[in-house]
Amino acid sequence: PILTRTDVGIHGTGHGDFVRDADENLLYVFHTHYSDSAVQPRRTAVVKAAFSQSDNRIELVMEKESFYYRHVDGSMNLE
Image 1 (cartoon, rainbow, N blue to C red):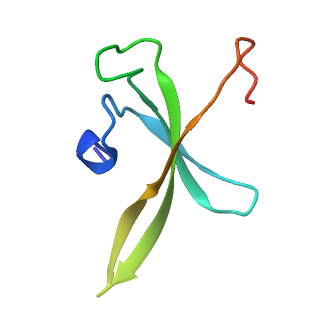
Image 2: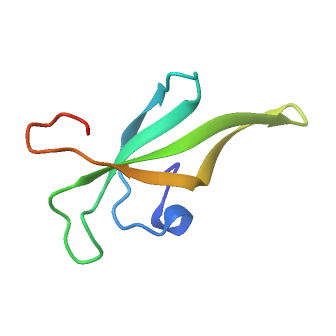
């Protein structure tokens, strides 16, 4: 996995997708468990990501301190 509970302290980090925001920053959007004791309903989270190069090696870096949840209302429109 590219992001785990050890990284962000949240249960159930799951599959996601990479997208770019309006400023072209790379973001990883993924689902998590609802809480430590309940899986459903899943929650949507976002963390900034970047590629770093050193010594001819490219590494994916997740900016763990940028973690936040996206809030969705009942009609599924992002708030």
